[in-house]
Length: 204
Ligand SMILES: CC(C)(COP(=O)(O)OP(=O)(O)OC[C@H]1O[C@@H](n2cnc3c(N)ncnc32)[C@H](O)[C@@H]1O)[C@@H](O)C(=O)NCCC(=O)NCCS
Ligand SMILES: Nc1ncnc2c1ncn2[C@@H]1O[C@H](COP(=O)(O)OP(=O)(O)OP(=O)(O)O)[C@@H](O)[C@H]1O
Image (cartoon, rainbow, N blue to C red; front, side, top):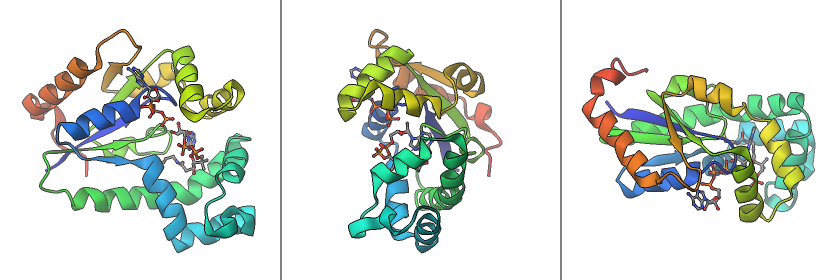
């Protein structure tokens, strides 16, 4: 049985960095942001529901209009709920298939900023939170995306707060530019390898 690791944390916390380290160590990771964007292009149900909600311009020129979608989604919690309700059930199905295709792997991960909010915690055996103080996250995301503080803070407000997330996580990896990251990731893998009883019975 593949042990499923959920990797979560707010925007700019360093989930992608942790996921890359896991991949380098031979653990495949389902990157939700990328897979979701792919599904929003290829899945006919998602396409028709998003078009019904936002109009034809959401796929203007045959590509996903990310700025239109982002301004709608991050503008209002109700809007976020509508988009999430269209997209997340399909992502969940897709992730299940992806895991089945990797049945030979001892461990596999899923990375999502909104793993818990989107109801994916029940899909995994262990939830790992990547934590960084909010100001560091804002600075990283502004630099990475050449984005404004206002925009990043808007996204942060649409996600679950760190304190709440911490309580629901089984492990916390601190990525605060001071605590070394690699020993923490190695520690996680070693723990999961040695303590399979902790993970039993795995969730279906
Ligand atoms: C709004 C979109 C088009 C913005 O795309 P863009 O390339 O600018 O940003 P990207 O996808 O890299 O997201 C950046 C970060 O925003 C945050 N974020 C994205 N979607 C959501 C959401 N539904 N709720 C809260 N935060 C979110 C995450 O921290 C994410 O890592 C895109 O994020 C999207 O399609 N979101 C809706 C689908 C979704 O929920 N994706 C999250 C993975 S399940
Ligand atoms: N320990 C670190 N040292 C230096 N730079 C880092 C560190 N951790 C993350 N970064 C940088 O900060 C930025 C944000 O990290 P990353 O993309 O991993 O965050 P994320 O949690 O995946 O964010 P998002 O939710 O937006 O996808 C990236 O440019 C990354 O290279």
